[in-house]
Image 1 (cartoon, rainbow, N blue to C red):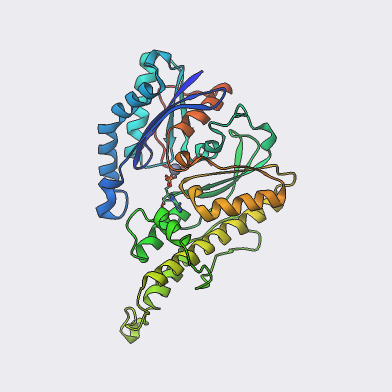
Image 2 (cartoon, rainbow, N blue to C red; image 1 turned 45 degrees about the vertical axis):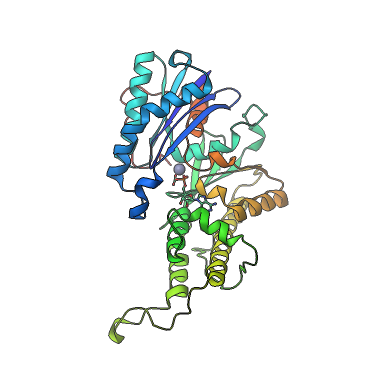
Amino acid sequence: MRILGIESSCDETAAAVVDGVSQRVLSSVVASQVELHVEYGGVVPEIASRAHVERILPVIRSSLTDAGLSLIDIDAVAVGHRPGLVGSLLVGVSAAKALAWSLGKPLIGVDHVHAHLAAGLLDLDVGGAGQDLFPAIGLVISGGHTSLYRMESLTQLQRLGATIDDAIGEAYDKAATILGLPYPGGPKLDELAESDGADDRAVDLPISRLGRESLDFSFSGLKTALLYEVRGVPRPRNQGGGYPDDAPPMTDERRRDLAASFQRACARAVLLKLERALAAIPGCRGLLVGGGVSANTRLRRELAQLADAHGLTLRLPAMPYCIDNAAMIAGLGARLLAEGRVDDLSLTPVPTTAC
Ligand code: KG4
Ligand code: ZN
């Protein structure tokens, strides 16, 4: 059972072929648009959808070539149809519908956020079923989402909490900009924070706990705290407003230490909510993590320690499957197909996640 996955929800045009039963990735092609958006410091939706239109067919073709297959070898077409930028999603959904219809194969609409949780089960030698994992906590940490789930399986999940403002990856990218690192700054901030001599206690940045039992996240206060640390606390308007002139100069050492302090605060915020979620899920056996920020060095280390301490089976994606990709779409698509959850040609892009 070979599933062709298609992904175009944001600024990555991707296609992949996955063996549905073993969850082995036969090919995975990702065409990044970073160079198109860099001068704007963020994704420009119009530019993104135009670039998807130009790239989608060559990317699909490459995914088939890399897998050594042709279209007639494909058994089903899975596509990320929610959440995302509607103009971007539309490109992948239209391509998937056209292919499924012309091949006479099933079409499967996949929730992109949920697919991030399936990424850690790709290319494992355990058949990918992972039944010993559940009930599990699901944690999606990406540029657009920061959410916690209670999972009974990869296809049965309930959201326990989510960010009430910035997603963690968004906070990383903004923090990187504040520190003068180029876009997209998350990976660069991570590298700096882990570099030799970095002092993660140089500055004690605040984390948002929200309510005593809240499983929601908030990162905008942390980002603002970093901004004030760098530029000073703005003067009140009746004193002329603006930032003070006596903020300490930004040296390489200070930038490195602020990056490490920010990285520490993010990890503390995530770990705190995971501890709370564990308390809310008695008998929890697994921890599934996905999204671009699951590539973060410190988080990967601390998630492994947490899983160890609580006897949880941890499933972290391999590096290529942390960021947006189509293998995770095909992987989850295969599981939905096995449950008979297929779509017809009325499938449409939806800007929000299903839960
Ligand atoms: O999952 P993803 O590709 O896109 C969304 O679905 O949002 O995540 C991209 C995000 C960006 O914000 C990027 O800066 C962040 O993941 N990211 C990282 C790291 N690698 C990627 N953030 C922190 N540390 C990293 N190593
Ligand atoms: Zn994503």
